[in-house]
Length: 119
Length: 107
Image 1 (cartoon, rainbow over the protein chains, first blue to last red):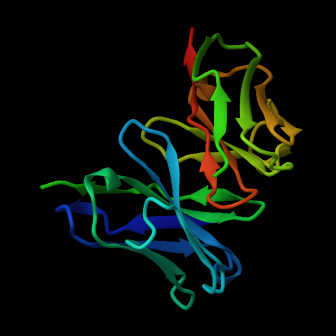
Image 2: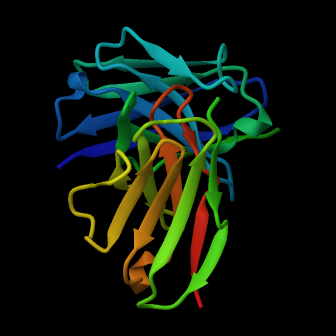
């Protein structure tokens, strides 16, 4: 059974940093791209970042480029999102999802972790 | 960026109704259009991928069609558990983009 479980969310001040983690199981982790998608309170879905299975290609939304870094440890079946210079508008539930690549949907999602940026 | 526009933004329907949600892309995306269902407080769930392929485990009352710029999600006979918000998403090119969502409510 495919499972993805996020952790690391919380309350952080504007300008601060946070690292999210996503533990995956039930599939060959290194063979699949992985992504982060966020949802601000009461709003729609916004793709944030994606990383290829081999970690050699990463993509970012313009809204986070230069502030967020996606990475993965295939030996630990874990995806990460390092978030720096956080802003109030980064407040959202962050979902980890399997997939999210060219011609590939987000086929399995975690339950999400809430990030709140506020003073 | 490719803009995805869903219509309607919301609709009211009764159990047993046939429901159609449309999604339009700002440029051609071939067949690389996916549909998700999201219930309140829950993660999205993939329903349809590549415009018309049903994800494993999804009831056959859900179907998708279209190519190029115009796509449709159809629920043939609405069930109580289908009252949710539905999102389309293009996987043709980065940045991957979603529609604004269509909320299906009980009439």
